[in-house]
Image 1 (cartoon, rainbow, N blue to C red):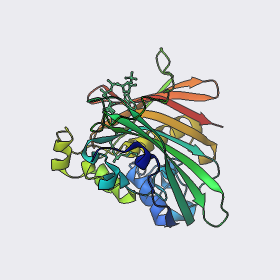
Image 2 (image 1 turned 90 degrees about the vertical axis):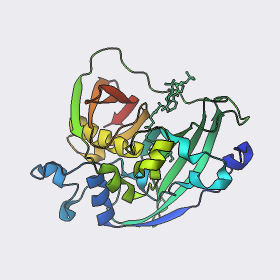
Image 3 (image 1 turned 60 degrees about the horizontal axis):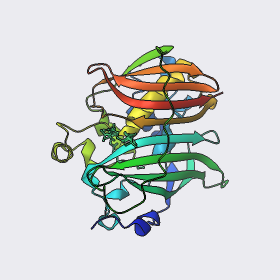
Image 4 (image 1 turned 120 degrees about the vertical axis):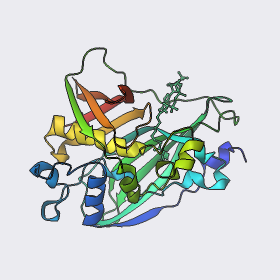
Length: 285
Ligand SMILES: CCCCCCC[C@@H](O)CC(=O)SCCNC(=O)CCNC(=O)[C@H](O)C(C)(C)COP(=O)(O)OP(=O)(O)OC[C@H]1O[C@@H](n2cnc3c(N)ncnc32)[C@H](O)[C@@H]1OP(=O)(O)O
């Protein structure tokens, strides 16, 4: 069944309620690599419950509807879907415990043409169930490699943040672990692409790849360390493009340029000297 534009634009993504426990926060922080140096007190703040902090990238997994693109009635060839872009705006400080509501919707569909894939833009608001306040807005682009030529519009296409043409001001390396995707998926994203070698092969990869949102968290960690001294209240927004897959176990080098109002960034895998995240935009106080 091919994509039906009207059907997918109005797809009823279920509203999700999540009771957030401190253990969920610690698991998320651990799953993006915090605590690799157990003597680093600033990293322990993200794992130790008496003084627990939430890495600001966490809303991308909060009150998430999961991998709903796999539902047959979407018409999406789920085996060929890749996470293309991700954005996050934080409106309020994140709690370590409470009840959250996630409301998701499709905001755009772009047909890139037969053999060139399609883009699906979506947005999720993460709301504090007690106060009704929106805590964060998460925006995603799904690059649907198997759905080009479905007869939809050819735009509008989101314009990525331009990258400076000079050497970065700061670089910071963070390693990922070989089993990182196996832990990361426990947050919410159960796409078998990240655990099942056969599904990875069908998608064109020699082995399972890392979740885009895990790389998003690793890069957020790098930005918070390099620019904000781990002060989570300083995070404003973060946008990026996933330009090439990361394999679990690789080292992610975040390259940062300071610019008016914040920073631009990209990231590369050191072992393959391959840019994996591009067109990054970071706003902070
Ligand atoms: C909340 C739901 C979110 C979705 C969840 C999905 C489930 C998750 O579990 C899945 C994952 O986490 S997958 C892992 C993370 N993502 C990746 O590894 C993808 C990495 N990127 C790629 O492989 C290529 O960039 C690729 C394949 C994306 C594009 O490569 P090419 O086809 O070679 O593209 P290229 O020739 O470089 O450019 C062609 C046109 O496409 C635009 N473009 C490139 N990369 C893009 C990207 N990442 N996102 C959006 N647009 C992108 C280019 O601008 C270019 O546009 P134009 O033709 O208009 O000039």
